[in-house]
Structures are given as C-alpha cells and as structure tokens.
Image 1 (cartoon, rainbow over the protein chains, first blue to last red):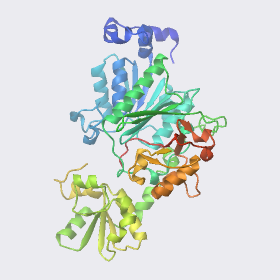
Image 2: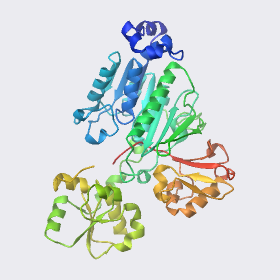
Image 3: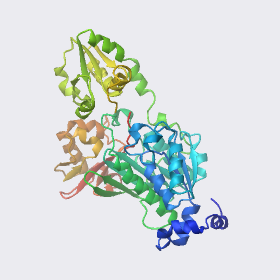
Image 4: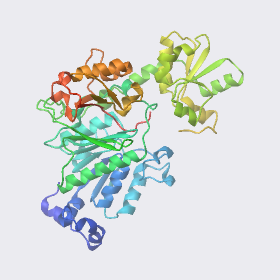
Length: 389
Length: 92
C-alpha cells in the first residue's frame, strides 16, 4: 500500500468530486476523511456476474478509487435477469468491456482495472497483492477456496457472499482477528452431492440483495466504521424475508489460518473439489443417442420410449412429449417403466439423464440410452423453434 | 424443537422449511429428522455415520463444533439450523 503522504496527495478531492460525494461528505461517518479513504482504496471484485454487478456499480458510485475486475466470461441472454451491469445490447460481448463502460458512465473518477482472465492458483497471489480488499462474487467451489486461501496467504480481507435460489450467505473472512472460509467449511462437498441444474436457479433480485450487502461491508472496512460481519455469518431468506446471523469462530485447527496450518501455497482447487475424473468416468461408459438419430427414429414410428427426468416446471417450458419422472423420484417410480422397451432418457443438458441411465442400467434395464446434450441440443440441432432456457 | 432445513436440502424433506422433532441432544434431533426423511441421511452423514464436513449445525446461533458436537443438549424452545456450504447460482 502507498504511504500516508502519497495517499493523501493522490486522494485529494476536486471540486467536482466534492459536489458528487456531497451526501457522503455531510455525514460524520464518512466526511472528507472517509471519502478520501474511499478514493485511495483499491478493491478487487472476483466476477462481474450476479453478485459482481451491484457490488461494482455501488462501489463505483460511492467513489472507490480503484476497482479491479476479474472475469473471462461473455454476456449471454440468461445473465440479464440478474446481472444488471450488463444490457441487452451487450449480449455476446466480454463482461469486462460491458462492466467497464457502465462503471465509467456512473463515475468517471474511478480507475477501472480489468483482468480478462480466469483466476487461477498461478495468478491469484500476484493479483491480490495490489489490492486492499477482495470481494468474492464467484459461483463455484474451486474458486471460492482459491479466493479464501489467497486472501489468507496475502493477508487481505475476503468479503464473501453466496446465493442459492432465494437464500444467501454473507460474511467477511480472512481478517487477522477473524475466521476464514475454511474455518467454516474445511472441505467442499463432493460433486455428486452438489445440487445440479435441476435444483439450481436463482431469484434475480437475490444477488442484488447480497451484492449490496457485500458492497456495504467493503465500504465499512475501508472507512473503519460500524460493526463488520467478521465472525458472523448472515443468512438471508428472500422468500420469508428473514435475516438471521450465526456466530463464526476462528478454528484453531483450520488448515488455512489455524495454529498448525498446512496450506502454505495455492493448490489445484479443481482436484481439491473433486471436479475432474468423476464426470468423465460417468459419461464415458454410458450409451448415448444423438438428437438427429432420435428424431429419425421417432419420425419412422419406431417404438422408442422417451423418459424426461427434469422437474415439472421445466417440462412446462418445453418438452419432447416424453414421460416425466424427475430424477429424484426415479428410484421410487422405476416400476412405471417397461424394461423390455427401448428407452431414451433426457434432461436439459444431459447431466441428470446420465445419472438416470446409470441408475436404470444398474436396475437391470439394458435398452436405455442418454440423449446427448439434452433438450438443449435438440433445440439447437433438430427443432430451432423450441425455446431454450 | 424446530430444525430449520436449508433450501438445497428441502427437496429431500418434502419441500419443508422446518421440521419439528422431540430430542434431548442434537444427535437425537438429527436422528429423528432423518428417520422422518430418509433421503436426507446421505446428505447430512457420510457412510461411516459422521456429520459431513460441508454441513454445519447450529443450536440457535452457536456452532455445535464449539459446543458438545452431536452430544450438545437441546431444549424445546431451541432452534437447530443446518447450514451447508453453497457456491452460488451455478447452472451446469
């Protein structure tokens, strides 16, 4: 970090800035000194998606001087329901381009530093070193553990939020006195137990709610004001509109920040989270059918039983007229299926139906195949009029 | 007492947000819960019967790892929360 003298010089406010931030300057909790702190601050947002959108927009509006953004993704139509930093006309463009433009439009005094890259064990420490606070807006376990460990190793606070459907968690990890993410969850769940796209989805406003909580915590850390979420896990239930908090403790046995720490460098987080191996081993052995072949067979009037293992609300969006048994119900309802018939199982993308095919084969079904790429591939390759979701 | 079920696990508990059980300890409460909702068991416990490391259990606002773990006593007006790690709105 810069010395106090250079910070002061660099963070002197111009008259334009004084006018812009006047509603901050007239409150004692921020004032001139606080606003200068914000201007001198360097915050790194990991992800310019659901959480990153409100986070970056509000930090920019509030006058955080330097905003780093890490993302390598491109805006698509399904992002627009919640990622409010991107517009319809941005679909197909890199998220960083779109986000940088929006931030510049809101506040030209902010220095945006875009890093169009995937955060990895190779680049995280070097990236983090240049910033004061890290805000974790990622959506997967490997990156979460990577962000946490890199924050612990570089001594930067990790302002955390996570969302699922209509429920969210937020906290501040990896400060000197407080717990880290690994104190709370030493290990990630194995991939098989993580809710798949069947149970996924997220209420569009939820990342807004949690991203703004993250922005609030970032600003409090910079100002040195208020009670931070350090040592507390905030649970938000948007459906019940409940806010609860749980006590978090620094775990003396924590592998990352405990007294006998074993994490002294960044590791392969995909391997740590069991991401590789499992999926390929499942798919490699399963019999598949391409959408074009299924179409031919159905058009010919062959006896093919189409089994849809998605959820009923997905069936309402689009379907192939298949027989609906959601994957979770399959063990209980397997007697509804005729093992002498040829069965093609499908879901949205092919992941859940692969599990269904594997289950059915173990249950003695020999003529069952998985539709490659699910109903999405069907919409891409067979019926272009079918909606995709 | 009430056991609060988090969103990702509600599908294994007939979509319920909370389940009432009678128990003297956290372990008994979780046993009663998984007896009523068998599908929950493999999400809360590993094959050797240990509570999974990505599932935390709280009595009111205290983590049972810092109390008496599954032997932590509970009273009728206590609330037990199951808090699994969630990664975000991932769509695979």
